[in-house]
Length: 424
Image (cartoon, rainbow, N blue to C red; front, top):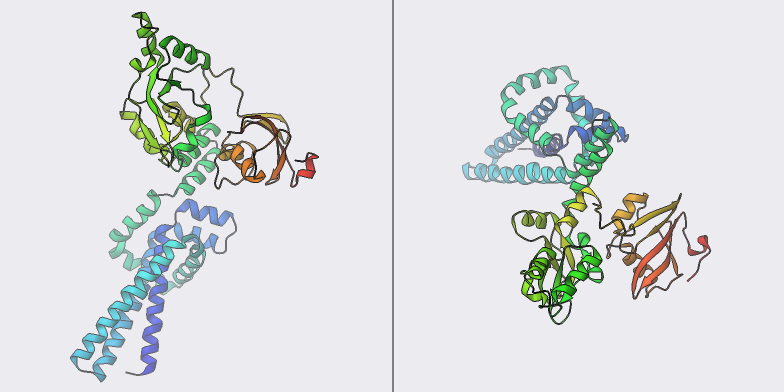
């Protein structure tokens, strides 16, 4: 066994590794993603679209080259070992070759390809297209695919039937542009995709906005509070808002009033509360509420205190958008357009919702609301008239309620506070 034969065998193993990676890319990449890469002008994007027109043929080509290179390399090393060592040496050589083939020639390139499908897609398509352009090899592939067809069809279908979230959104956008879907339908698909990553704390009514009464409140007073706010249910608490004892519904309260118990404590009508952590997935909670008799849920923070409440309507609004009924008409909107590039917003508007409505790209790192972003940027309790500039927008605090920011004037196109002529 010469060093040249060893080097040739190693080269063949490298070729096998490359084509195993290429095969993985062709199996994983979807047609829609290939079209997107080609539209973006990615190198090899056009080759990728052409190769995927007959994905099965490309996969057979990569399997043919990779498997052939592996077999020849192992055979060369085994034959060379037989010339130098006894049977034990040959067995040991083959065992080492198998390990190298499995780890270096198969697992490593496939794992690398899975992690970098988009980056490797263009170069992989170029390799395959040039191979298939060689007539004798193309004829050999046509023959081999008759045998391999049952195995590659399953891989091809899996690649096409399991698109990623980004691909689903891209498909929805393309359908909207082609007038296959309405704008509202495209937005709903985007909301559904986003909903999978939404936490309960992003959909809840925060603690300062929660309407709640003590357990020693009379039923008549509780009804007055519900009617004044325009809601049908609320929590009841013992010592304070962190001590939630139950949930009362206005129908249960009216039923007690009809029986002459309007002066009784509201605690006789409350129902057992349902608690969830603020880090729970909203989609998971929605599934639970579909089968559980809870229409209002108490959200608790990591310390066990009350962070807010969330209702079935709040969760549905994360998908469908704001649902306005006759009791919501008097509420100020979270965002009010004033003129081009200028808005008046409530401090509790979610940052991602503000970004979606205005086209901004504000960060939502350690906060969920615009008020939280302003708090973090100022580094202090805001005062009326203070302004901060973030991400090309100027935010001027117009109204505060205690330590809460309730109204903010937003002006686009401001990189610094001085750009809007308002200082802290």
